[in-house]
Length: 325
Image 1 (spheres, rainbow, N blue to C red):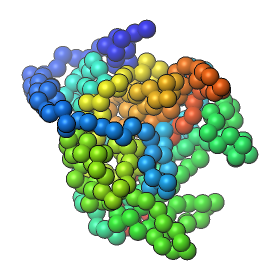
Image 2: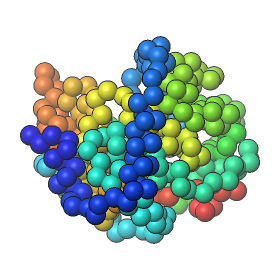
Image 3: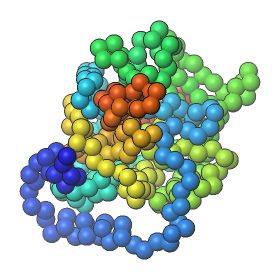
């Protein structure tokens, strides 16, 4: 079993010596992560899960990857991705040696993005490719592992208005729009007024203790389901870097033509819940949920089973449902 340093060295390969300016940025980032904090600031009673902790989800929970050895899934032909041109040499850690340093690079990358605050009537548009079992099998085993050779990608498009009053999605090629209260329909959402406050790890920890309106999404799920201001997404990565159990997974894969490095933690004793980052740009490109050992007991989960897989295609702010940015 390789340790994190060996895994990262093998994944990233040799790099040029960092410049003095880059070394100084790394020192500054490390000092920022080592700042003293009180014990009460980091108490967390809410478990880290992918999804929204309410009966009605804000949007569909997502995850991505391959099955760590046994189940092989080939991503679809790549569609055009956002252009991330940051040079790897500019990140704080040219050769990260653990999950925290990878997440700090991801936070730095996000902070370079341009952002304009959206109007309350604009929409967050999120487009993904989601691996799903055949519909008949999915109805029989909705929580079952993805079937090798049978599961296929489905394009998922969702629009959520900033004020939380309108949701939309594509169903059978048609735009389906829902409004709060229409025909008895109500859906939960994390208020945008709360989202924009999550600019530090401390703010995220406090929100998880006392979510506004009683609606809470796990931070990693929020990063994949909402179109977030850069400072909020960066704060999420830094919050995750401070949580126990975050490890580099040696089974990270080539995802949609992008060599990926996986960071995750074990849930339910046998599942690895992971974020996947592009190894060159440190951009978050998806998530996956994969069994790293047999489920045990009466469960039928087996090591290598893949339970969720989603590729993030596009995230943008648009003016109305149907627009894709």
